[in-house]
Every structure is written in structure tokens, then in C-alpha cells.
Amino acid sequence: MKTIAKVSFVIIGSLIGAGFASGKEIYTFFGSYGLQAIAGIILSTVLTGIIIAKVLQLLKNHSISNYQDFLECITRKKRDSLVTRILNIIIKIFLLISFYVMVSGFSSYFHQEFGIPILIGSSIMALFSFFIFSKDIQGVVKANTFLVPILMVLILLLGFKTVTPNIVEKIQEMEIPHITNWITSAILYSSYNSILLIPILIPLKKYIQKRNHILGISLFCTIVIGIMSLCMLSLLTKIDISISSIEMPIIYVANLLGKVYPYFYGFVIVSAIFTSAICTGYSFLENGKENVKTYFWKNVFVCGSSIFVSYLGFSNLVNALYPVFGYLGLLQIFFLFFGFSIEKKRKN
View (cartoon, rainbow, N blue to C red):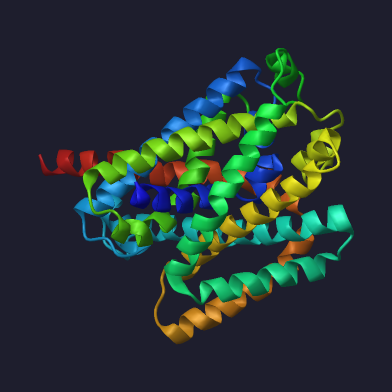
């Protein structure tokens, strides 16, 4: 159970970032589907759980030490093939942008709530990240093991507080989202999450000693992520103005619930951003890691450049880029589930 919890907290920490904790992700992918929004969230979390189980199984059965090895495994192609190069470029870009989004979310929160300049907020986040990235995967695991359980409890408490008998009608009244239907939204959301998940799962393989660990981790993550996503949807129904006009929708809700709640949820936002930032940033740095010197300068570049990208705006980055990467992630999922089948047919 200790192993299952430790790995699960890192996985959940990588998913609960600024986009999720702020409510922007759930709004973007499941905006106004009524009961279908609930079905979409359930479907997406089940798909995410299946992806987690499939990847962990591959990691246990094959000699995979980095993301390049993983791509070769699922595509059955050599490192320099066109397919592996395209997938690797997509993942690298997404991980880097995701880290930028977290830094932008961190600075946006402090700017929205306390009027702290974007430059100061993003610089603080960049410095914290630089320090953690210098500590290898152990630093990432320790940070998530401490913070994620607290996040889970606070999100669940706030979510359950907003559940009312007419919750479905309130969900139905929300603004129209950016995607056409709930099934497409569910698939794209799980696809988008898979881009975040797989690179961080690879260094976690050393914690997976038994097969029952895989089932336990995938079930635990599916249940927890699903419940928290439904809580976020419930919180969004409390917003009485245009959601698209707010950088941090759930902070707006917390202010409506009472004086103490903004401080509680402020901790959730900051912690969620931090856990996701260190997971995505670390995954980007480890993808294609060559030596200590190269890693150091990549760390400097990634953390330093995030300060300037944060000026683009948190909402703009989430709304414009996350659905796009959901579509791009479908290519990776295709090879994950069908790559071996294609290879067997060719041999026959």
C-alpha cells in the first residue's frame, strides 16, 4: 500500500496542476453537457486509468529506461524513425509548454489575489523549480507525497460543500465549451493527460516491484481523479458571471463561500501548480538527458524562459493549447494500444 500510495500521489500530482485546480481544464473540456458532462468525466478518468495500467505493464515487461526507449517499444521502430521523432517532438513541446502554463498560473494567482507583479511571481516559481529539478526524481516524489494528500482532502471538502439537489440543471446552464460533444471531450482529455503521464511514469518504474501494484495504482488514480473532477464541476456551477472572463474560476467561487475559503483554496492552487510544474518540468529535462552539464544548462534555460512566457496569460495558454495537444496525444495512444498488433500482422 505504501508503494501504491507513493506512486499514485506523483501521478495525481502531475495531473492536478494550475489548469485543473483553477477549474479551467474542466470548463474547457466539459463546459455545458449536463448529465453528459458527468458521463464525460467518468469516461475520461476510466480511459486515463487504463492508460496508466497499460504503460506500467509495458515498463515492467520491457527494458525501458527513458522516453526514447518507450517510443521505440510502442512503435516497434528505431530511434531515428520519422514516427518516433514526431512523437518525441510533440511530447517535448507539450511538457515544456505545460511547465510554462504552471509558472504562468502561479504568477496569475498572486497577481489576481494580491496584486503581486507577474515578474515577481514567475521568478519565485522558476527559482523553486530550479532547486527541485537539481534533486532528481527523489525530490519530485517527496514533494508530491507531502502535498498531494492535502490537495485531495481540500478539493473534496470544497466540492462536496457545493453539491445541491439541482446540480445537474446548474451544470446545464453553464457556458458552451470549446469542444463539440462529451465523448470527444472525454477522449481528448484523457489523451491530453497521457502526454503528461507517460514521461513521469518511466522514472517511477523502479518502485513497481509486483503486478498487483499496477492494478492498485491504476484503480486508486482513476477513483481519486474522477471524484476530484466531479467536485471541480460542482464548484464551477457556483459562478454567476462569465467563466471565460476569469483567470482562476475556483478562486472566485472560494470568495463566494466565505472569508476563510479563499485562503484554503489559495493553498490548493499554489500546491497544485507546484506539484504539476515539477513533474512536467522534470519530465522535459529527463527526456533526452545527456550529461550533468547539459542537464544543468537545460534547467537554467527552462526555468529562466518560463518567466517571460508567463506574460502571455494563463487563460490564453490553457484555452488555446490544451485541446490541441489532446488531438496530438491521440497518435501516442494509438501506438500504445495498437502498435504491437500492427507488428504481429506484419510478421504473419
